Image 1: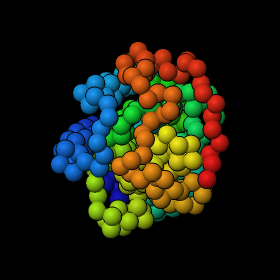
Image 2 (image 1 turned 135 degrees about the vertical axis):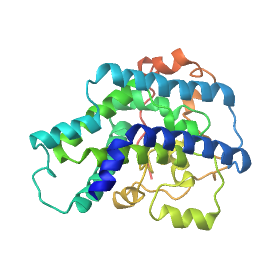
Image 3 (image 1 turned 90 degrees about the vertical axis):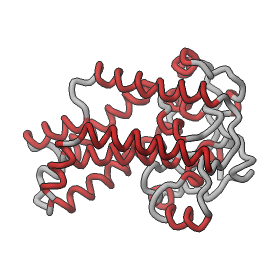
Image 4 (image 1 turned 120 degrees about the vertical axis):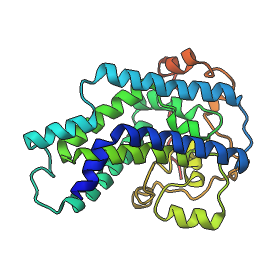
Length: 278
């Protein structure tokens, strides 16, 4: 276990970049060959906006945070902060539990972003995308990225996971976000097998519906069990995957299809937040 954790921390940059580029490229290729839905918005513009946000968000994190989650995990280990730094459990068990616990925290965070009006103002930029594809999994407002990092740093201090566990979790989260936002057509039997454990594109696509009873469901990014355990699971959209409307009702035009428009979105009029519905 020690060798695995050492490998992850030593090759962090290579692993992060390799997984990001590899999954982005693979999903983009599969979307061309086996698309699930026909796109309605200009793809070149959407990709430029969504990938541009990746660059902006990376710069914002570097400017605002002197230490990120993995670095704080190292400091927590030195100072004995957090649950796992006070326990004497087998390292492999702590490693697995830490990754799963961090995934649960992201699930809770996502639900809060749909319930708290201030958070929804920020998060809805992710939902006004009128299509859903691999780049939608990278489309987050800088305010949301900052808020998410604050939550993640708090979780690291409370849990005390190893730096390797944090790095692996972040790599998995990034890769799975691109996978389950993919506009790809998976065989139904394969989808059923996969979603017993992880969030699949068909499962997560429901979450991007214009219907409140659907976009307030399926909050998970990695493991599918959280939605099943906490009664937020919906198997399929009412209109079917090909006929459903993606996005938010008030943003079906091109009002938010510019970089300034996306960044300004949290400050625009907020439509009443619908009840989660059934």
